[in-house]
Length: 80
Image (cartoon, rainbow, N blue to C red):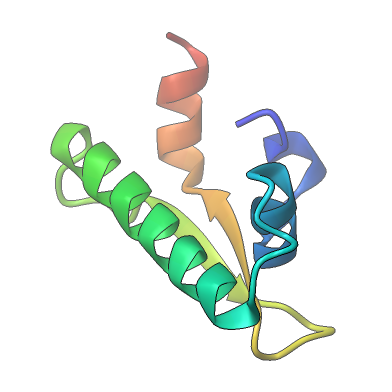
């Protein structure tokens, strides 16, 4: 949420934020996958029938994805 106005958060930033940048690439991929999956599952309990994340492919690295909260969900959460 803190990065919402600056744009998307990429997978590398997520790994660095949680201090997993020194682990093996496969371990990083699994961690990122579980993190995003658990995050979306948790929020989908509250926000049913909505896309939780706006996901785009990174322009520089086609293997990496960029994440951002759906604008409607961001608006609701920011008002809490």
